[in-house]
Amino acid sequence: MKNNIQIGKLGEIKLINLIEEIILSKTGKALIRDDSFFFDLKEETLDRKLVINSDMLVSTTDVPPLMSYYQIGAKSIIMNLSDLLVKGVHPKGLIISFGLPKELTKKQFIDIVNGIIDTSLKYDMKYIGGDINETKELIINPTVFGFKNPMFIIYRRGIQVGDILVANNKFGLTGVGFNILIKRKGNVNDFPGYKRSIMSVLEPSISGNEAFLLSENNLATASIDSSDGLYKSLQDLMLTNPKLGFEIEFNEDLIDMEAIDYSKEFDVSLEDLVLIGGEEFIHLFTIDPQNFERAKKEVQSKGGQILKIGRVKSEDSIFIIKEGEKKEIKSYGFEHFIKKV
Image (tube, rainbow, N blue to C red):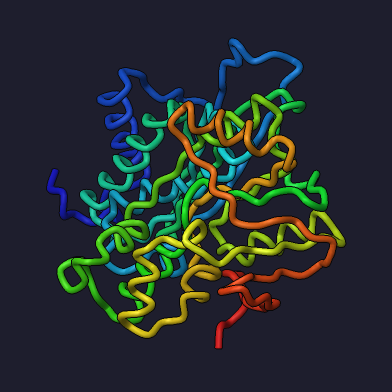
């Protein structure tokens, strides 16, 4: 069967067979054919909570220029895993519903599924099943889940005044990547000095090591994934923790040097690149200052990193300290249905 044939000519059953063939070849296990899906709890016990996340990937809003179909499949899983990992939860299972335009080719569909399965295997997550429907644009809606003793889950609520705000990576790369790919219609060949930024958009990556260590040692008071942008993520933390705000040190502990260089070379606002870039999948944590050094050593000893980027304040606003000057910021991260002007 030719790979360039449109899936509208294949039908749902053949598409499901394709998924099963790919899973069987990569895992040696077949999909369960039934009316519902089943997951063997095995080692899971009654003192654990089921932790679930479901974020929808929609081609018009979530797929940037030049992203391959394999990368699309991988991203659909990354964007869901990040929200689970930041809670300190190891993912266990995955269910996916596909909305597929009939013009999609067999090869493109296979590439998507390979991206999904390879990423799932990387995080030791079992593909259980899902659904397929015809839609006008590509939609991938994964649901990922895991189990965790509720005593060790890092919730959003729990922040205290004086807590240290840390991140497990530096900000700005995706801001640069989106600026190049969308606004400048560029690619790696056009901007070879900013390859890391471009690839951070096309092939996003995440680390859960920091969250796992902070969770297991009860060293974080709260956590959140930054995929909607740093500013929006801090706003979300403030919504869950009323009457509190943040003071951010706008320096090289916060900002990737590639973003600093790009801002200078192309006269682009560094604040915009860092605060509203979005889709970094960087994990933010708040830590009691008495536990900070211990947390830092624990994470570093296992090959991870936490970078001190600010503090929790009693004012319900967000401030940045830049070159010794403090100012309140009022920007916005990504929000569906709100038109940017």
